[in-house]
Length: 150
Image (cartoon, rainbow, N blue to C red; front, side, top):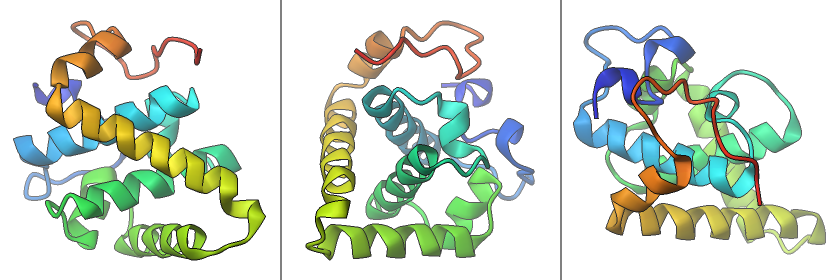
């Protein structure tokens, strides 16, 4: 996957030469963002972007959590790859942990979404071609061209 095809690119943050993600890191970010985008119906640019709508934030926090669970990133490096501060990553992963452990019914929807995204991410890890087919990826994609959620 070339650098232009990755969701971890300059478009969503100022990424220095030293902080550019390597191929493994790009693959992890792309798979997590694609899984979140398919499950939520939110465009990838909004998941990694800065808008603060609740649906975007939930998907973004789940993305942070799954990227950190991959053990490929530190919080500061993931933040730099996405053009965010490491505190945003730390807050997101703390919120996910709190929401998953809480027995409040208000977080049931969040827990279900987390489970669906995690399952889809794992399916993409074992079959990367499936991600390509589901997103209908083509050369020069902008990341905003997802099919509508079924």
